[in-house]
Image (cartoon, rainbow, N blue to C red):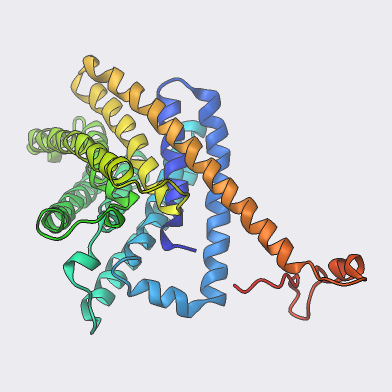
Length: 366
């Protein structure tokens, strides 16, 4: 299981949120419950993996390629919290998930980056950096977005809450500047093969899209705040800057995608990392809608609606790919468990009986 599999919950949650905000309530509700199941299932699988395959988890934790994937659990938690607040008016659940997300953010931010810093053997920049590193930005800004919804109502000092949330927003922006500089340097000054253009490179756009959403959320939450009044113009300017940067990335990533799949003829096959492509599309729809509302820009509303359609289509294809892969693995496990011989029927039933460890004997190595 890839550490970034929580991107499935991120993608499902943000598409559901976009549907809710743009009037597709029934579809938003269906996606909400799918996300609840996905989020719960992913935590069960993650805990099982930690308990049963700790060495693999530890290897992921110190891997430059895979460790940023742990940040998807932070963003998925906060996106689900936002769904509870918007779709079900449940700020208590949103607050609980915000606290969980904050704890996960602290743990992963300082454990992952410290582990990568002190590692003795390190890959080159060309092999070690990818768009997945920007998940650290997405995680940070997701804390800000949900916090703007739930935190001011739960603390005695609204200004203190806004100060903390603004600091998180600025921290996320700082991380983006650091990381995107290295990623763009890797793009332009190192050999770039089709295999290097993985789906998480769409996080290049998604990270600034969620930064736009966080800026818009800050502006809405800080209305009338004496503390924030002096820096609101700064927040407004950077919010538009983030949206413009996200918009700039879209044609670039589309052209690179055409180069990868049409020119270099790399085929499409399901990969859990494709959820990292769906999320930015849904996030761009949501952040553009919030930008329209914050700055009174009705001429951009069609952009939000158009990207929602694209995000829904991308989600459907990726979800179908996941179901196909799941079915294949189930059939493979069943085939591996099926014995040969004259007493095949009897033995095929007994093979599924619990072993001494209390688990079915499937014959599949895990």
